[in-house]
Image (cartoon, rainbow, N blue to C red; front, side, top):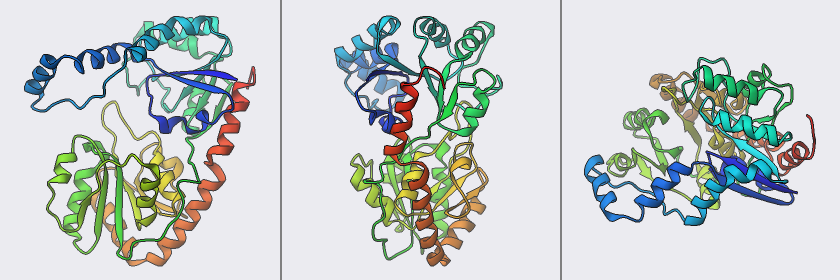
Length: 358
């Protein structure tokens, strides 16, 4: 089986199960204009100097190959006529709806993949208008769809009955329990940006000097963590190696995801929660739409968004009940084994791609 995944969100972790499908699965980045910018910016020093002067810091961008740029542009035409299976992932309600509607006329077995949970016309990334809604509604009508969350699945039922949920997957051979650190340790890993609630976690660390806090990741708040002088705070940097990341999860006593909703963004899932649970580490998360589907009382806690005191109280409780936390971690591992194993979810993707109708 040959598959092309055309996506505006090329994060590899989102497609772990899809990448395991037997056959040739090829990923194409749809962000042609963005790739053009990266291609030009990375090759002309004068542009980098201007950007540095304007922003006050250099932009950290990867070099884009011409072949990547060409494939992005060419894909818009190739997908109309290819005999390969096609999976598309785009957030509503952008102008891409026009192209997706056109593509659907040529590819009747097209699969739409989405993590977007809000299909009420009020919550959106791209502001809809009548023209956008016209094409998006016609594209979505009876389309074969795979959603990451059950909330997204229920929302799409207003457009199509051909919708199934296949959540993000975890490689249980990589993310597995290991020996805990002797001292109680709180972990955060992910994008280091304000909407992840990093500032509140740092303030809690200052108020609880007897508890160790570890941060891993990269982002706008990276320098703040590097410059942090609190003796109980350690910045691990960005961890690319999955085995090393799994070890960091497994060693920690509890994982904290303190995200809060801002305009245009909410924590729609939370793969890091699943990775932590797979490593036998219980979790504390805010009640964003994604984590609410993942976190159960047997292996974690939910707190309100922007509620620093509630988060602090949970961390204190966890530190005083480490035996219970260890038991919750075991249950968390069992939960992930039963629902999020990459091998099983890969088979579910194969079934979707090989079926004309769901």
